[in-house]
Image (tube, rainbow, N blue to C red):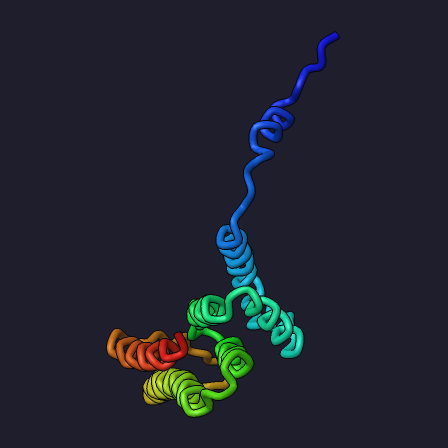
Length: 175
């Protein structure tokens, strides 16, 4: 009986003379490396990866193409800034320290900006809560069981948005 060839066998026969050039191999390596970066950043920011392991992974990725990898890491770190969890956002600063340890001035400015954002947000919430509790007490309602749910006004959000923009502007200096 005649041998029946699979589709894979036919493809392999017809393409055995084709070889990848060095540029194609390098581009494929860069593409593969860039796919790993979002996972590395997420693990680090979430606290599932320690500083030493993160540094080692980034160094391995930089062996492929240091400039492209660093730009992608900074972009991914910018995406991971949520302005909802201070601890995670400060881990972004730690990651930047690992990637670009020589940029201390900009790192300090960015850290101060993020801390300023959270301090401003906290102060706004405390002021609103205090005003609400004072108003309730004025009409005779008071007690430790009262926990008002405070929402920020559009003006408050715009003020915080300006701080976010300043932080993101500082972060863009790393790209």
